[in-house]
Length: 472
Image 1 (cartoon, rainbow, N blue to C red):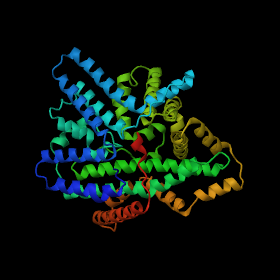
Image 2 (image 1 turned 30 degrees about the horizontal axis):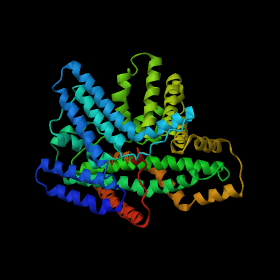
Image 3 (image 1 turned 120 degrees about the vertical axis):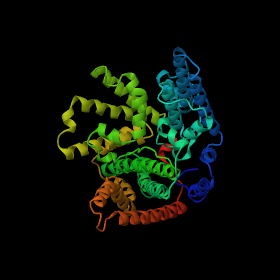
């Protein structure tokens, strides 16, 4: 089951939403959402749904025990929660990587475990951890109802690929929230935008990126390699921000307000600015639960750099069990340190700052996308050093440069800019003109209907392409 699938659009979502509207009490609505969320997850992971329930139960139980412990007994319980949560995440996600690394370093031939990764485990594990840690810190009270914690961890709109929601941000909404026609309308519009990002833009850019990354060195030319790199750069942004838009929109339809997860990251003027705009919920999580506990920037420059390297190492590792992800994280951490050492790098020449960020991000995503370090180095060498041109390279370039790709690229570049903010400003200053509030609202809802119809046509006639972050 996935947001960008016909069964979800035509059956699951309408049925759940209609039932939600007719169920009378908020408690029953919450039970309905729990049942729907478990069914949603079980559709794709029939066995691992019990793992998610176990995760919720363990963290609920440990948080409740905090109420019956002395201050000295709470810390061992917190350590137990960390060991259980991170142990579960590590066992399912990183066991194979660990064995492969040991075999590579020691020349041993330990059998590599073939463990299927539960979808979204990185997301619901981090949510569970944030709840337990916040209870330990006495930022929130331990919840007495297990159903509340289960809803918090399993809520289907953001279960599989975020955004990562902190319990303190939704606890009150679980207890008390309202629906309205305005919220439902806004939610549907936001959902349609996210769906369009995925189906109409990301999938098209992804097809080009997959083709280029499948080429051999002999077939790759510099222009083709750059097309593949930029295509993936756009694919992953519209894929992930599209999912976040859909999750935020669905949440609003059911009365919830989730934090924004993206704020036009490709207009950033530094790598620090980029991470204030990209995957905001993950950045906030690592800052709150890793960077600050390590000492943050309170213990001198050297310790600050070390803390940032640790955070970016963990950020890369969080994304997947492959050293390419770790290198990608450390690559970003390197530029954080460079910007600290050389602040003029991001303070002069506005155009240069944008180009600098886009270049760093693009190179980083080549490493992120590559199947292994060798492929990443090969792609980067072609992008920057291969000036060769022959019929084989020309044929590969012609195959990827289609009219559809060019048209989608233009749309993608426009949509990656803060166009919505520009429209809002125009609307505020044009109350009596053509772009007044009513006209914009009507046009936006009409556009949303058209986008959903286009997406359904595309889904009906194409193959299923899952979200990139489902595997994280």
